[in-house]
Length: 510
Image (cartoon, rainbow, N blue to C red; front, side, top):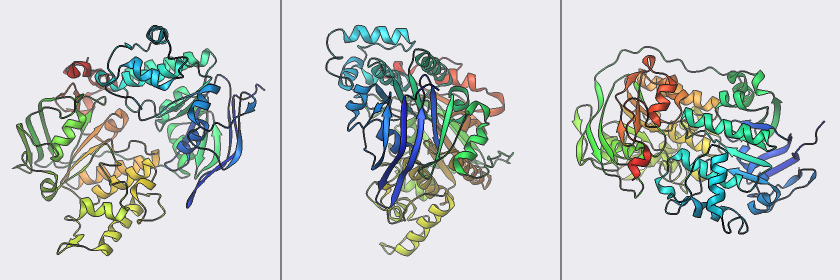
């Protein structure tokens, strides 16, 4: 057998109150795309951080290319030929592509001729980027290219990718997969983390499954169904949600002629947004990040008042009202940024429940917090949405990203709002948690709520939405029934090239 490129033997990492990785043993072969699968809190992020030198294991050993491997910092990993593209990019928007790349590579590589090498590598791998462009003017797909090219310039032998397709159109995903397959043909190995199981089946040669910090199995993903992979991850039978026909009620959320100038230097201005959502329906809004989703969300929930156009909740004009007033009218919402926007990082889970549910759940009386009721509500959220935590007294920042997402979603859904606006509802959660969230959204709509889901996950939108609109360059296409749409057509509109897709995101930045 060919010797493994990366070997982990008995790797263990402990944190107060939890064992994140428990005796993990697996290997990545040469020229192999190896998936690392697991539900939220399974230990994937901790494991790859140890491989990349961000953390050190408490026990166990790692070997790379046959030699002992124990990086104490990322630069040690890069020196050995390990590169990593994180889910959340670490780029400075005010600097050029070339300046950003220079900050992320060794001083020797950053010396003269860097711009020419960026052009050469990006052209060679079909990842077109201009080294002189300011990062703040790039689409999210282009920013990911910057991160990948930065790794390629270092000639990696192992490339770690964490949720690389979560912000890409279907067309951009095809380009990425072609690039990864070419890298493998040239001798690179890839350790790939994703919750998109059909992608795992199409791309990866082997998968290692983690559950509760332990390795519970391995397989050839191409020989398994997506549902089978999900059930390996969660250790139980998975029942996917079913969207049933629902009799629609009156318009509960209306948006007419909404135009809004972005408050951010590299934001996108909204241009004449029209939208109606009726009781009983879920309207999905697709789009590549950076095309006005943040601005639309802020306008809908009242963080930015409407200067041009109108927003109505159950017939009442709310364009001049803030978030608290809109909550009083029955609106709840989940912003994209869960830590810091959806939840206060250093406050406990029960305190975070009070922040948004105090009125609808009666958690404050006479100006005083009813701690018992707040704790009971927080515990209800934890139980119904399977939030893995040491207790409701733990700070929000102590939860893994996926578990915090489940908590924030559950906190809003269990308030039974009449209008719910959510952005990226299942971002970073495993298949079982995604199914739970989808079922809850469908049940809420069936009970008479109007639901808006802003998401870059087209599979998600097609699974739960009655109608789908596309936002591109700050413009919104008319919402159309899902039965009349295809993933390919939506993908083209997301990129700004399909019918009604509007301008490219770059034009909006110009």
